[in-house]
Length: 211
Image (cartoon, rainbow, N blue to C red; front, side, top):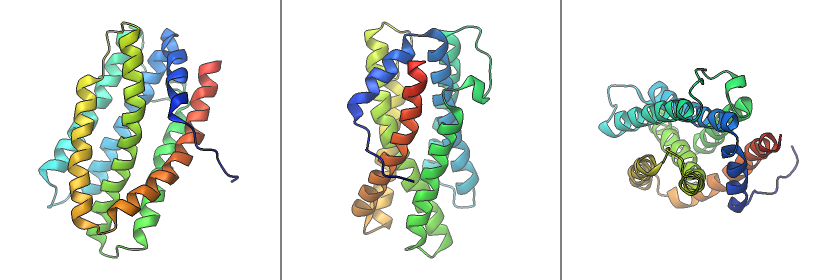
């Protein structure tokens, strides 16, 4: 695959403004956010369910599931007739959203597999890094989106959700730096690669917003 020019965060609000301006597209966007939160919750439960499952992990998985429900309900707030699941027809570029999540997971696991041979430590750190990189991206998108919701007088606001995501990031950062002496450098490298993956995903979202 050819090189990718990393997307500027400044381009995110324009795309979101175009989506929010259309009721149907806005509902589809909210359902797409619900899908991404649901994928996160499911991934946590699939990889971190063991005798050593901590309160932090349970709290995180529960909040991700609650965020998925929040966005699903918000889609009905915008468009009361919206009753769909996670079919591609009910999402904004659903396949691209799933690919974004899967590629990030693969990226992190490949990076960590070279360094951490203990399976439990590898799995736990993969959870920490994957979730951190995704949630740092989510914070950028959610902040821009919440600003648009505020300016347009929407009944939906993300204030509490953003605060919970900030709490997740704080918890996971503490764990990463405790377990990985190279956490700062590794996280920076992963974020640089995530930016390329996100650019490919967001270009498809932008294409949708123009139709």
